[in-house]
Length: 303
Length: 294
Image 1 (cartoon, each protein chain N blue to C red):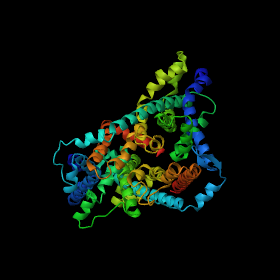
Image 2: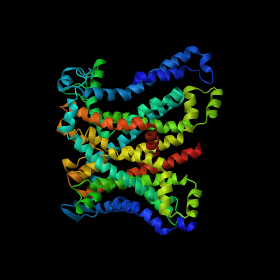
Image 3: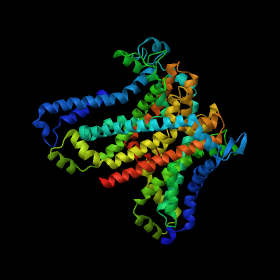
């Protein structure tokens, strides 16, 4: 991949800078050009080489790992046995299903509740709304460890521990502060006249929420959904706490258990499992990278 | 008109689901957790009153002190490394690559969205020592350095953690700081250049002071995030060797779920929360002071 990108940046550097300084000092400019290209190549290599190595490794057999040097190419490029073993013996399919079952319902609930709350807090007019918004904001700062034990007690007493419900409920709640806050901010930028005109036309608030409010922020909603998706999908703490049996494990907990299952001794299936996990996020990222970058940096308050 | 948008019943209806879930799952548990610090036991064995015993234990406990020390050390070093790398990358994007930086930004950001567990397993393989020589050790061998058993001592495992965190998050801080750097008006830079400032001097005297606000917010994000480090440590070293890479978060998890000490676990969680709060407030206040002075 790095070879693809370098010509790009080099071509750009070759165009004279607007100040015209480069034309006056050609030797220095050449040195600079070589230097910046080198730096760019190193940066890209640092990011990309481990991922390429990961993919190559996922195609190697155990013997290749032990006998060939670390940077050797796989002998058989179509050796997908590691993948099938990771999915069947490693239970990766089951784990992925659990993740989907926990992540998407909670994503939907977080967004629905969050938009509704954002609407009620920003568009509607009532006393004390800024206090409630602050209350939500405070939730962003609470570390997960602080609520873990009471939640465990609650779910244990409610008899929910043998299901995915604890995950769905906890993820929904944890996503709410940020979603509500961001939605309120987005509604703030919508001209109020729009809602006032709708009330003059006789729309009820609920009607207005669904046919004006949600469509207006649908772009923002999508961005927030992406941010939340990555947070929940990659979560380990909540999933580790509330999944006590193998049938309930999410993909991250399952992957963590790969160490135990295949040990560090069986390299192929482990790398294949990691590779599959990386591939999933890569696909989303490839299509939506600008949005993901903007959304994550905007929503990073959650850290 | 005001009546419709001021309808309290509808507002309550729209707000109720979010507020209920949020209160039940986050607000109440925070206070509940505070209550736990005064008890001993867990939901299965039952609870008994302990008074301030948990806090006395916290004060005297060697393992807590080690975990706190590791947490602080890790947060400080990681923050410096990842914000510094991010800043250098952002400078590279803005001043060297300029418009061509889009592709580099995209690629360097990619590790940010990867699951930490996947990244950690990958890094375990990269830094492998035996029975196979991993790529990193293989590279060292090429330059004539003996292979290092990275995960056998606390200090080398610590550095692998730092390298992994930097690899994972430098793209994030680069984009965040890039957004701040792009906001610097071109005229300011141009007039500084006319005054003869260039290269390092331009960066030191013009760029850094002007991007100070976004640098500070990056520092706050970073230190807050790294104080809560959990996934990376659990997946890469599981706290080992021994407990030499165990942060407060993991120690809290172990005491609570492996030993069933909910009261003591809650005290550790409270300690962690306090540390996060103090650091955030501290940085926030010092950054405000610096900004008014500058």
